[in-house]
Each structure stands twice: as C-alpha cells, then as structure tokens.
Amino acid sequence: MRHLSLGLGFCLALSAAASEYGGRLEGFDYPHPVSIFTLESQGQTLEMAYMDVTPKEPNGDTVVLLHGKNFCAATWEATIDALGEAGYRVVAVDQIGFCKSSKPEHYQFSLHQLAANTRALLAHLDIQRSHVLGHSMGGMLAARYALMYPQATNGLLMVNPIGLEDWQAMGVPWRSIDDWFAREKQTSADSIRSYQRDIYFNGEWKPEYDRWVDMLAGMYAGPDGERVAWNQALTSDMVFTQPVVHEFPNIRVSTTLFIGQRDRTAIGRDLTPEPLKSRLGNYPELGQRAVRSIPFSTLVSFDELGHSPQVEAPERFHNALLAILRR
Image (cartoon, rainbow, N blue to C red; front, side, top):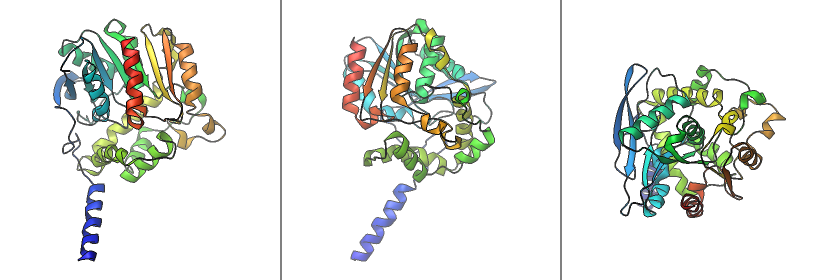
C-alpha cells in the first residue's frame, strides 16, 4: 500500500505539472469575473478579455493594469485586491494575442495598436481618465498609451518595464519571426521556470510562482499551442523592433518607475556575444537613466527584488504603489 500511495502521488504530481489549457486559457480560472469586449480591428472581429473590479467604497479613481509578455491579467491578482481595498476601480486587460483574448492568425502587432485597443475598451466602459500601470512589456505599452493619450492618463506607472534600452541600436542581432516561432514552439513549464528563476528572480524560486508557470505552459501544451506560439512570435518581434525609450522626453504626464534592482531582462540576450551581453538589462542603471529622460518622473527602487516585485514581495510593492497614487 505504501508503494501504491507513492506511485499515485507521483502520477498526480505529473498531472499537475502537465496542465493543458485552451488557446484562450479555457480551464484556467481568473480571480474575478471575466468580460469580453468585441472590436473590429484590421478587417476582423476580435475579442478582448478583461476584469472590471469595482471596490466596495469607491474613491472615484480607476487604475488600468497592463500585463507583461510572459504574464496575464490574472497575474495582477494581489494588486487588484490591494487597489480595490484602497477604493480604486481596477480594469485588468488581456491584450489581443494573449491569455483569454483572441489570437488572430494574421495581425500587425504594434504598441500603437494595442494602446488604441485599450483606449477603445476604456471608452466602451465610459472611463475618460485613469492611472495606467504596466509591467514588463506592459510598461512599454503603458508608455506608448501615455504618449498617445495624455489627456486620458492621470498618471503613468511602470514596473520593471522592458525596453528601457534599444537592443537593436546597441547591436543585439535581429531574429526573424520564423525563428521566434521555432523558439516559442519549444516552450515548456521547465523552460519557463528556468528562464524566470535565472532572469526574473536572480536564481531564487518560491512555490507560489508555479501557478503562473502552469498558466503559461498550459496554453503551449494545449490543443491550440501552435497558435499561441505564433502570436507570441509576432509580439516578440513587436517588442524588439518598436522601442519607446527614445520618446521618453515627450511624456507629459506624471510618471513613476518601480524598479527591482536584481532584474536582468533583455530581449535577444541569448543571441548576443560578449562583451555586449553582460551590459544588457542593467536595471539599476536603466532606471536612473529613464528618470533623467522623463519629465515629472520619480524612481522607486527595490534593492533585493527582481523583475516582478508585485509577485515577489506584494505587500512591500503595494505599499509603495498606494503611496504614489495617494500623493
């Protein structure tokens, strides 16, 4: 019986590690009800999934949450709760091509397009102005949104945004979409965990991170895995070829950067030879440089945290976030 019990436990562990979700994360539950916004874009009908969470005691302000490339709206779970308790209405969006939103076979992905899609959703919800909080790729998108719609942006908040440096201009080799696609098709739970442990969390790992690994890996492992990988390839090209950093001086809204100092994220690092590779993703330097470039900006540093301070140390991050919002 002891051997049978151990064997059953091992099988259950394998089953848990091999979750499969649909191409729109069917089977993975979000922390709040998910709504769908239907829009016409580039000659096709697409659907954006989002959570619109109303606080018990509203303070009249709205915060829009923009996820990173390897994240979803659900990853903001703790932040949604913290903001809601403080009275903020929260809209957490899955961008087209990601998570529970449509994954078109053909789409010209651009930060401009995703910002326009987000603005259309907010107009649909009759939200005229909001704070915009973006993490990782969502930080790039938030900056683009603030540049395009300053009149609709109460404040720009970026958490370890990628794109604080122009990888192309620095000499990082270009990779074709076909090459991105081939690379994406090799994605697994182990590869996601290994990458995030080494790059996001400075070699450290906590069991609570596995839920988000399972969320991502399950889409690749599911029946629509190739469509997921194709959209990820298209958005990788978008991130690499559309830097926002050169336009930072044009941002005209109050801006805060929250930077985990141990982050080393840089797109294309694996193709880059030394000594350039070792210079990429130096977030202590990049955060300081960004604040010098952006008018009306503030830097909040987390010395011992990495790419996702809101996941790694949620209480500490939320205290800092709420202090900025209240100010």
